[in-house]
Length: 305
Image (tube, rainbow, N blue to C red; front, top):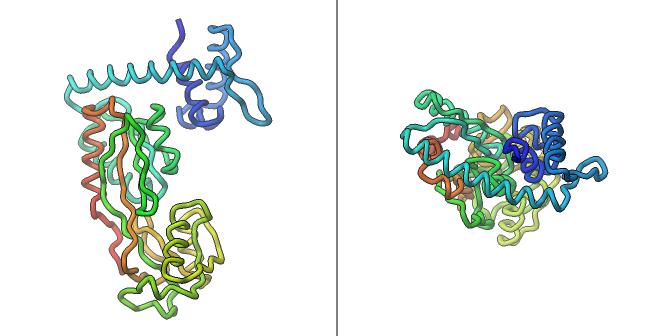
């Protein structure tokens, strides 16, 4: 009989793309994951992973096992949901994926709340980009994901996945102190021409929003520095190297040398919780979504200065 834990290890390699990433997601060492898959290969008398450069590739037989494992995991999830519903209280392990600024600005409060009110619930957080976490929910690699979208890029929700709105995250304009915009109450989008910008790299939604918005207002954006992380954008702005647009969630207090200005119309991104439809009604999902909504809807621990 095939061992479910070994199947989980193979499934994790398929979902996360490497043995190392699978180990990180499962809380194992890479050696432990490799051993699980080696045992599975002996059980099935089948080669499941093949070396490809520095990584591995799943064989056709492995991909077939992965499809079967997803069906098994769905059955197990329905059984766990039914048992938890009978107990009537959130319990057991709940895996949560959240994008960086939500992991920093929202999840600590939510996890502390859940731990205080539901000690039988073992909630585990992993920081994951939104475009990856939707697939992790669909494949059963995580139980719940906190994601976001913008008006220019609506969130695609696959069949079999439920969603709940958590709230809106306002973005504001950050400029160096001494900049002509500093000290003003608001700035219109039409006034943004000719500015030096620091921004996320091409391909990120923030970059796409900025370029589309400025071009719609008749300005070609002059982006002088790119950075993945919002704290880096803030630091570049504080050094007087440009201006930036940063969401407020998870931003933290502004350092000296940076002024915050409202941009009108205000850019917003909407936050959602996603989970598999088979888990709907599971008390741990329901309570976590309620906590996310309570702490996320209009909650800002760092009001504008």
